[in-house]
Structures are given as structure tokens and as C-alpha cells.
Image (cartoon, rainbow, N blue to C red; front, side):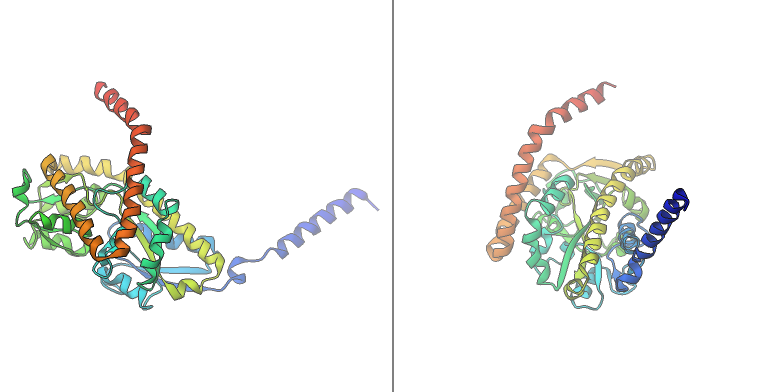
Length: 363
């Protein structure tokens, strides 16, 4: 017998057996088809694009066995009814922000963001290692869903206004589109706030139904054309420093998922969370330059306006906490985390930040 030929043929046979024994994930696992409506316009390739990104990654990681079909607002349900549809089981999941539904439970604002809150880096730490996962679980379950962090826009802008905001008096009677508790804070200062879904903001601003509106930041705001109907663009977006967007999964549908699919879903949402914030950090600076070049007037909120808004936000949290023990309990832990993080970052990063600012100014 030719020893070399025997070894070669044996190795080939072993390799062939290994190939034949390797299971195909798509055939080994159940085929699942979900529907996922979202709250964000299909024209926004980062917000809606993240919804598509997550669906694509779920399919890729299961070899096509687990498919999620995504829909824009109004195709299956209206933009601000996505949580209801997922919680009721009309759809298996939805891509939306909890603070759109704070009327159901004030703690739903916490799962997205609070005014004068966490940076995106701090927010991710809070969600993954700071205890938020356990604190939020009951909030989500009460709505019939399991909430999985699936996106974050990072820092936002302070919105578009038809007239300049020079003092607190300029806020009185102003009709402004805003979501979350930022609207309640501004309401304390005389602003007439409205929550309007993304697709409906431009026509409301164009017709004068509202005097101003906030959405996300330069890249998306440019796409939605707000600069064509409002001249003044303000910063910072103190009410949404790092809003988190969730995949709201019907609780029964989630519980019935195989464990492998649950792991895939969480992994895809984690990728989506970072994909979104990273993409915005790349796209926003260039978009802001284009807006300014086209005539947009960039303005910072006056110091007295920011100070008044901060005081009003603390009053609001105390008022809500007095009426809702769960909000109070979660907010106290959130606030302690925020203060600790702020102190740490001041020690770790402020000196470097000041140096870089000075060095850049000298260039």
C-alpha cells in the first residue's frame, strides 16, 4: 500500500465528513418572520436606516432563518402608536422611543432620556452596567413588551425657530414641537408645546401651526428641510443629550424565541445602537457647514434661558416623583449615576479637553 496516498485519501475523507456533518443554521432552526413598524420617516437613512440595519444583521446571523420586515410610519401603524401595536401583539416588534408614550407611564421617558442627562457614552454604561436593564424591565413589561436598546442619536441640537430667542420673555406663548419631558420643562416657562410625529413637522412649521421645532441634528434636519421654513438654529439640545431608541418586542413573541435567536436579536440591536451614533458623528459636522453656508443662523441659547430650564427640570422631576414612586426610585438611581459620571469625567477628561481647545485655537 502507498502510505502517502492512504494518508491523503484519509484526510480528504475526514474533511468531507466534517463538511457533511456541519449543520445548516437555516434548516436546523425554525424559520421566523416578524413585522417591525417604526416611528421615523423612511427618508432618514440613519434613523430609519438603523431599523433596516438591525433587520439585515438578524438575517445575516441566522442565515436567513429569522427575518424582520421593516415598515415606516403610517404603513402599518401611525408613528406614535408603535408601542401600542407591539404591546397588543398586532405586530411582533417596533422601532421607537419610549418617551413618545410617557402619558402611559412617566418612567417611559427615563428609558429614552431626560433633560440635562447623560452623554451617549454614559448612557451606554448606564444601560449595560449601571443597573438600568433591571430597573427598566418592569416598565417595559407593563406595556406588554421587552425593550432592547437599539439606537442612539448622541447629542442633538436645540431646534429651529422663526425668531431669535434672546431672553426668557421670548419663550412665552411660543408654539414649539418637542417630545419627552423637555416639553414639560419648556411649558413651565410659557412655551406652548406639541408632540408631532416626524413626517408631520415640516408642514406644521411651514403653515405656521408651530413657531419652531426640534428633531435630531443637522444631518436629519437638513433632509427634512427645516432650514427652508425657519432661520434660526439653536444649540445645545439640553433635553436630548443622548436619546436611546428601542426595539420594542412583544413580550409573548420574545419569550417564544429560541435562545439563539434572542442572543442574535440583542447582538444586532447593540450593533445598531453604536452604528447609529457613530454615523451621526460623521455626518452631522458636514451637514451643519452646509446649513450655515445656505443662510442658517446658528445661535446658542442664552445662559439665563439654560439656567431657568435646568431649575424647571429639577422641579418637574420632584413633582413627578411625588406622584409616581417608580419614577422616583429609578430617577434617584439615574441621577446618582449621572453625578458620579460627571465627577469622574471632569477628573479624567476636562484637563485634556481644555488643552485641546487651547491648542486648536492657536492653529
